Length: 172
Image (cartoon, rainbow, N blue to C red; front, side, top):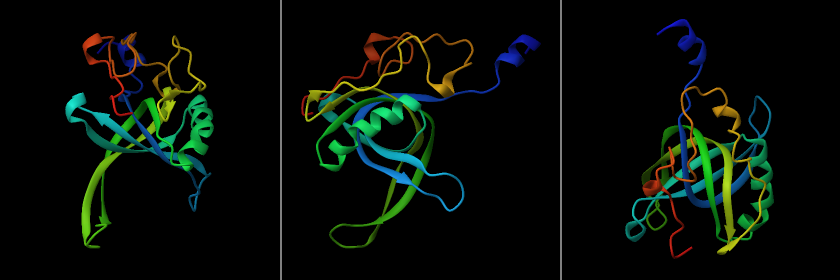
C-alpha cells in the first residue's frame, strides 16, 4: 500500500440498506454519557413470496434521520404500520434471551445492532409520507471520506444494480 492509499484508508464503513417496519422509538438514558434516540427496525429480506424478518436495534445518529424518526414517532406509538427505507452502518450481531409468550420458558433470539444513518422513504398504513431526506448527492456522516466507492444506487442497491433493488411487499 503506498502513502496515498494509506492516507485515504482511515476507516472502513459497512453500510446496509433495506426496507422494514419502524418500531420501539425511544430515548435511552445511560448511567454514564448523554441520552440518545434509539429504535428497532423489523427489516425484510428474501423473496417477496417468502419474506424473512431481521430485527435491527438502532441508535439513531444521522441529524436528518433523527428529524425523520421524530416525525414518525407518533404513528409508531399509535401502532400504525410505519414502513421505511433505511441506511444503517456498523452492524453487529446481537444474541439475547426472552420469555416465551405461551410457556414463559426462556427462548433464544438474535438480530443486529447498528447505527441508523438515514431514512430514504416512509409510508404510514400504506400512504407515502414526506420526511426530511439526505440530499441524493451527499453521503451520511459516517460514509464521508470513504475512498474508492461511488454509489449511485438506490435503496437496496449497493452499486446501482437494478436486480438488487428492494421493493415494498404487497401486504404493506
